[in-house]
Amino acid sequence: MKNIVAVIALTLLVFNGCGGENFGKASGELSALKQALEASYQPALQKTQQGNITSFDTVDANQQTALKIILTGTASDITPWLKKNIGKYDPIYLYAMAYRAAAVDKAPLKDMFFWSAVARIRAAADRMLCKDKYVGQYLTILNMDLIQPAAAFYGNEIQRFVKDEQQMNPVLKEAADWDKQHPQQNSPAWICNSGHGVSTTEAYPQAEWEKRRAEFKQQYTASIYK
Image (cartoon, rainbow, N blue to C red; front, side, top):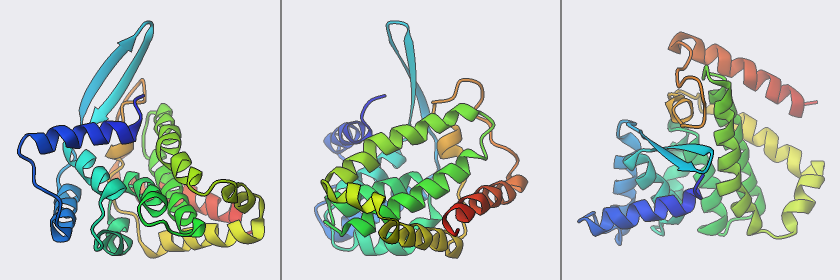
């Protein structure tokens, strides 16, 4: 699997070179982000072969544009808008938000950890909506490509933080509370169609989404509210 940050950067390089919008102005960056987030998700599956290893990646141009802006956009209005609205969108953008907190906003460790915790809660809940059990591999890749690089900005501080439950657990609880306050309504297509499963990209019926998510989150919150 190619590094997601590198893939996104390449995608936007091609996009801008083909007459794409100049994102230099703050309002331009945020407008482009909103447009990309609201666009319909239409991923194209890409298959690559190296020796006896077959890899699958899904690429959606609007998703890549949105990720690029979240990961590297410098407009001052991006982060405030995301904090108010990101709960409406796919959890993959929460992973990018965690990276943004570290790399762009230079935020305190607790802020980065908060967004990474929210991302993991919601992404894992969406995983429960996919019939293919192997799609969970995508979450491992997102952790490696976005959360681990974000944590690296804090050096040894991150090690001390995760070992200190008095510091870490309140942030985990805050993330769980934020999730409750922002009902999750996104489609699980972003992970069910991630290209990392081997049997099916189908999701369970939409009528079951709320129940399946709630069951997972109930177990998760029980583990941190001991």
